[in-house]
Structures are given as structure tokens and as C-alpha cells.
Image (cartoon, rainbow, N blue to C red; front, side):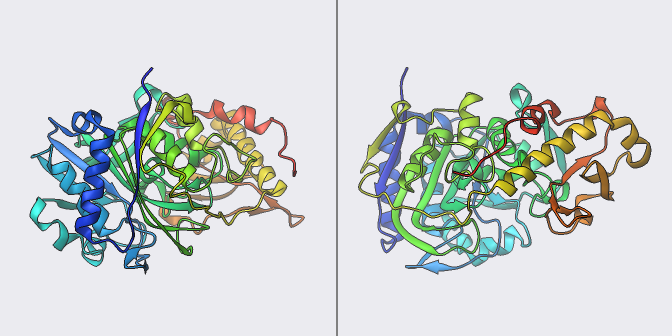
Length: 405
């Protein structure tokens, strides 16, 4: 079986935008025919940039947390080599407007020659989109009609650490497609133990990216927002999201084949392993052909600001237990809370609202003895309308406890 090809190039953060463009084009040439094949003959292409918040810090003249204008411009120019149709670019932002960030990041002026339309993917109208194959966490997701109408997705991601998934990348970047109206801000309904890595995989299954470009001119340590910069002088490009991200993790000094309980996966499962199991691509080095300058010459060790924690594992298992409580007592909850979203903890409803916007900051509930308890948010619908695969919680709820090394 042919290996997935991923280009890794050294490109100084201090290089000109024209030099960045040349590097992206060279990376595409090295990856080969799959780039043209994924972009040609499309009617509407949507670029999902990493522009989810107003974290507009720069280092060495490049964005720290958001997709840098030079990399975005280069990606757009590459797409225009193969695609003359409609081209959209945006994000489902949290706490900001994609249109404001479009201007603040300099996208408007840089992309003016390429006929690109900015979109905010948290804006409606919305449609419920089925996940091909039934999905890993949910069978359907609410998404903007703008997304649903696209026949190809390009992920223009940022090389960052992530508290919950270890690393960001082209696959995690797709999680930002989900509208906050339905899932809360910052997507609290899904940004939770057990759900998060599986929802990320579902986002990849919905419409696997035709092109993945990871901006590693400047990266970010420790966390996805507000972490310190690290000048990585790197561009990563591929056409398979899992292979591209596994390569990016190796650049970050991480093992993309590791999983829950092993650094950096102290929050939950490694989404790349889950994605590989769902057929989205290879994680093992043997299944990936790295071309260009290679990993060794650009590797920089990243840090993730999360420690291994027995308490966090207990809370995770308690969340799974609450999913089973809901499954067993659905009729009872329907009697009192049909159509609402409930917060379940310790087998009790501790909060209930009509919409995710009515919930406060995410967190854990407290027991009468002061001990923290895992909390599950759950939409109360009859079995015929259920979109979540509740069976996946069973082995986690009753599985072995996480034990400190």
C-alpha cells in the first residue's frame, strides 16, 4: 500500500510572505498529484483557518496563536492554481467575529487579488449533517449551511500545544467548524472528557480535508490559547489529515501513537489513534513518507501544561457513568426535562436550561462532602431522536482506573 506523503520544510519566520508562498508551492510539488486531485473540479471550496478568537499576539512578525496572513495567502494562491470557482475562508469564532478578525489579521488586503469571501461559520442558517458511516460520537452534527454547501474543505491550521489533545493540527482545527449556538461557547457540550477527541474525529469524517497546511513559522507552547511562543520556522503540508498531524506531532517532539495516560494525552484519548481506527489515515511512521527537509532538522520540543492526575481520571469515568444513568433513566428525564439540556452529576440533575448559551463556564460539580464530581451535559430527547452513541461510555465507566506512574 502506498504511503501518505507529507512535506516538512524549513521556512524562517522572518522570511518574506513571497518566500513563504514559494515554500508552500514547493511543499505541494513534493507531495505531488494528490494536491491537484483534491482541489480540481470543485464548485465551492471552504478554507477553515485557525482564527477562533482575538488572540492577536505576534512573535518575529508572525502570529502566535492564529493562522498567519503569509501562510493563509500562500494557501489561497496554491488553491487558485487548481480552482477557479467559489472560495470561502472563515471559522466559527468564539467571543469574536470572523469578519473583524479577517480585517485585524490582514487577510482582506492580502487576499484581495484572489476573490475570497470571508464567512463566520457560527452564523446561520444551520442544517443537521449526517456523519458518513454513522460517526464515532454523534451520528449528525449541526453546521452552518455555508459549510454544508462546500464540496471541499482545506484546513489551514496552526502548530500549537493543546491542553486536552496534546497538539493542534489540521484535524483538531476542524472542530472549530461547529457553531457555538448549538454547542455553546467554547463548544462546552463537546469540549469535554470522552466527547472531545471523538467529536474531532467526527469532524474529519464529515468532509476529510482535501489539503492540510500547518503554519509552524511560529508555534505556541503549553496550551491552545495564551501560551508562550516558540519560533519553529516550519511549514507542514499534506493531503491526508491524520498523516499530516502525526508528522506535525513528531516535529513537536510528541509520539502520535501514544494514548490516554501517556504524555501528552492526560485529558483523554489521542484523537489521531481514533481517527486511524475510523480509516482516516495512518499514524505510524511506516505509513507516512516525509519529504522535503525532514523532521529531524526542524524538530523542537513542545510543552503541554497538564499533569497526569488520578482525580482527572476519576472525573472522566464519572462523566461516563452519568451517560449510563441517562440511558437507564431516559423516561424519567423526559418527563421533567424534555427538549432541555441537563447537567447530570452524581445521578442528579444539577442544572437544566433550554439552550447551551444559558450555561455558565464549564467545570465540575461539587458533592456534599466537597469532593469534585464529573458532570455531563445531555440533551433530553427520546431514543428516536438520539444522535449520541451512548454505548461508547460503557467500557470507560466500568474500565480500569488510571493509576499514577
